Length: 59
Image 1: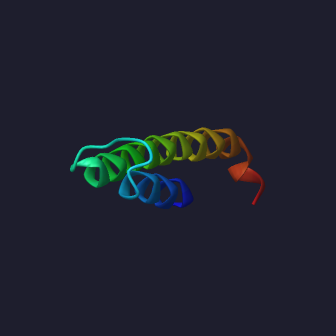
Image 2: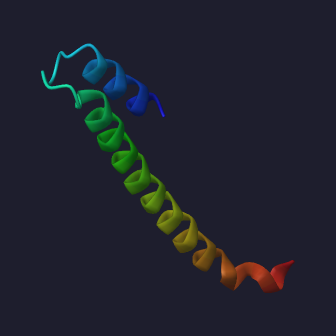
């Protein structure tokens, strides 16, 4: 979330790009990075859940 705010601020102040669509570009870049990180986190949760499945009989 912080990355999205930083990228949006940088693109809004035209420090990275100078065209008019820079705010939308920053938002799209931040959102795409956020979705990639969410996908990685879901994969990690699924992997750890499968690792803990073998201990379910101990409960």
